[in-house]
Image (tube, helix red, strand yellow):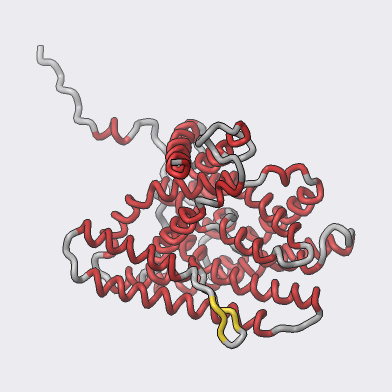
Length: 428
């Protein structure tokens, strides 16, 4: 009863808040996050009203399976953007931009936080500084995709953005694994090339292979069904299977083997959309089915934000430097890489802004970084940055896409009113 009630209140609260956001010309994503913040343990949850809100962060964590499912469907949807036609058209640009902007962001954040260490050694360790630099590379695909969907953004920059966001996560994973490995070496003095180089490469390769295999199997089984509803059900079943398989972890000959949920689901979507001739129609139906799941994902993300970190001046100081350095890195990294690949001036000026949102992937990296001696600082800084970026990022993404001319200005007439047949005029 408690779980079902919390899920229902989260959905209803998020949707009601989106009506207020519409009046303020804010993206629905921001509304869902604010709704989660209000339902969380620091506002409504603190009142301890039975079944209304989340009384503790553990209550939010108990619904994490919904968040994992939503991330899987988000990655599957982004994978559908990797159609051969688009890859031939801008694949090279997307790869160059995806890699360069992530590396430049990591370098700028590393430089800023390492400089802080030398100025005030007690503030942050070098191992935590370089780990935070790698985490800075990660971009939240969920917030970006939701803004694109809500405003039906379309155009060269939108297409490039979705490809870059997808590539960004793979690059971020490599950068984090390498940086975290170096951080552990700095603390222990033991060099472990398996952790620094081999394990991240194995994770990426196996994730791509697993996702590709599931995508091919989905296409194979879809051919046995002709009903749209059965094809939809089968697709949803396979995406859920993909999410489950990506959670596997085991050790082989002392090497830790794991999978990236985002990469596995993304590759599944990519393979399926390129070999299935009815994938576009099917994806439209999947999108309709997953809409409530995405609302729930962002409400839970908002409820997870820990407001207690705002009372720690040290976290606020490091967090402010991290946010400023990461923002500069994303903007100028995207600007420089777009200039290198001869992108238009419009894309050069706006793409970096759309890469600012940060959430689940960064938080997952921060949880891994908790093993460092100063790991709690890394976690709290990332929590603070997520709080800022998730509340501000979607609006900035919307403004950047509008500046690029890929979002049409919103009208004041609702679609339902526009679609009503005109009233018959009385004949006199």
